[in-house]
Length: 420
Image 1 (cartoon, rainbow, N blue to C red):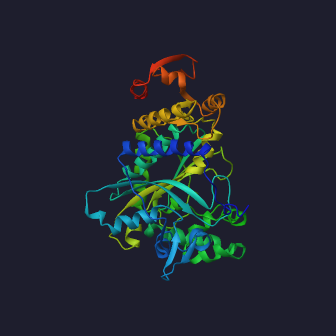
Image 2 (cartoon, one colour; image 1 turned 90 degrees about the vertical axis):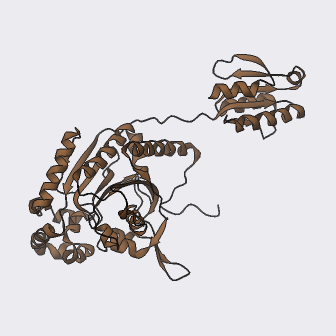
Image 3 (cartoon, one colour; image 1 turned 180 degrees about the vertical axis):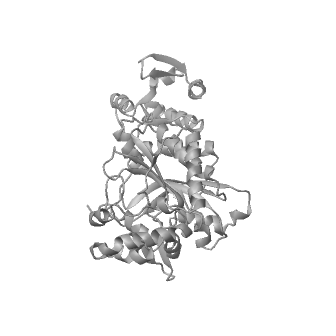
């Protein structure tokens, strides 16, 4: 073996690809129903975008980004998350000047250098939703409702919606002061990363993955107790909107999320089906991110949903994704004249949208039938010298074993009609 796939990456083989197609098509459809349009951004961006947008106190920027210099000496980073590139595109193309709100969805690979774990690789894949242009908490409730509906459609059970408010820059000042006061006696016990966060962004300490730091922050002051009137009203509006739609939730003051750009709403859909790392979907509001990367002041809200984790959760919930049929028709041939007729017929059927296969391995007729059965062909056409002499073919229904003779000049039209 010359080499293996890099650590933390995974090949998608055909026996798994249909599952990805299933969730991707379902996500695109529910986004259409909710009025979101697809956006695609480059796999790599200027490193500064993530330093300014994600925040230099996050683990992503400090430890996990795949960054390098290209041949033009530009600092480039493979995207570690989906929101910042969409925000960059929104500002760069001046979409803020058009009709608002602007509603996007995306389906993208992301890259983070972290220890591979269940449902999270170094190259992983995300669905995402972003809404720009409104402070109304109906937007927050709408994207939560979309995520909730989608997860239900995918058969996910035993999942809980947890919501919190992480406030705004103004009300965070008092919370940060209280948090620093609480953590000051414990400072020496904090990990090196959290010591760095202590002055710059102590709230990120609440999200530290270190078991020691996790224990040290037990009983720490929570943001919900320090919300300003505007953030408090916004959180009450969010809860009222969710109540109006009948969406159940739990208020979890411990939700911080791992990105610095969040303001006000933060939420997660958490399951017990895939172990301790059970967050399938998470997101929130980011009212200053567009401005932070150079655009005008524009509110935004969105979420990211991991595709690998979703598929793991669906499997744990016993969801069976229907496998695709291998072929509508298999053409079995005997002899060179039959082969020529079969090739002509296969080409015409494919042009008409019928999935057709023929043997390309030189198999005997008996093994051609075995192959047709292995690929789960719905029908088999048999062409040999006798069939050609009678200007007809044998058509076999593989489910019932029923066989009929069909005129050669009628078979394409008949099968095309049947497959419509």
